[in-house]
Image 1 (cartoon, rainbow, N blue to C red):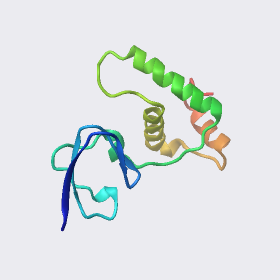
Image 2: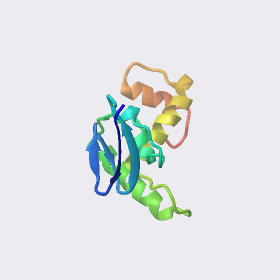
Image 3: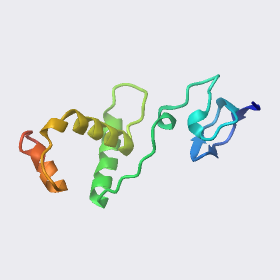
Image 4: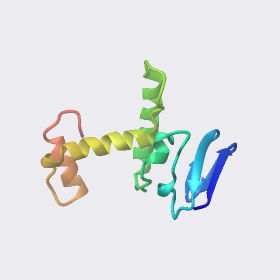
Length: 122
């Protein structure tokens, strides 16, 4: 197997995944980025996640962005940046944890099935 080692000085794209500055990566002939072996570093969290597209109402996206900014301003610790994607992952995890409470055949019915049981939801 051919092996190529490189230092990504500028962001580059390999199979739809961008490597940031100073990511040392050893690539062996692969079919996709999921087959990349990293000998020097662990890839950043966002590069280890599955990319999915979601359609949001413009107001939802705007509020998620505002909330992410607000949460970042209130943070007590330095570290992970909170983004709209972070909040979508949190919401997804919460939804999966409460799956037994979900009932309905439409988006509104599903939302209402959770809203009726938890104060604070519309």
